[in-house]
Image 1 (cartoon, rainbow, N blue to C red):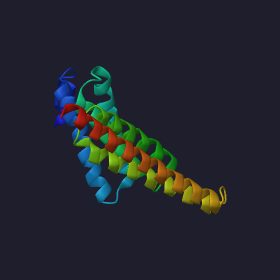
Image 2 (cartoon, rainbow, N blue to C red):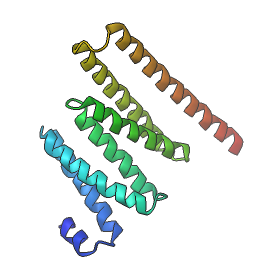
Image 3 (cartoon, helix red, strand yellow):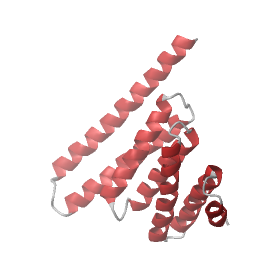
Image 4 (tube, helix red, strand yellow):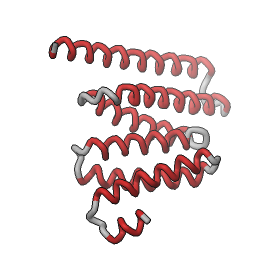
Length: 171
């Protein structure tokens, strides 16, 4: 129904936004039914719609958030089959959510932290696959995992300090 309505009113960004959301919900359902390829297709459709909307109005927080969510969902569904592509999408999601958090969106701190964790998981999967193929050594994998965790911890500490500084300045 939304596809027909959106096609009939191509300038209605509200309908397009809802169409993108519906692709994400269908993707989520397919993913939980174990149909990962079909879920990926739906996530890609939703992400494409939200990217186009974001290009129309980069200041629209809802559209920016849905682009980040689309990258996250796509990254998670790709994590087992295409770890390099998954990592790229998860990093884009983490960057977008961290940017929103820096702009004062307190509710996104939890989402930004979860996105950082998603990136770490995808990186670990990718490193483990490279190790299985003999393309990296076990020591290299251990070092990379430790560095990733240290980087995430440092980012979280810096964000928490920034938030405390902002509270002190305003209070």
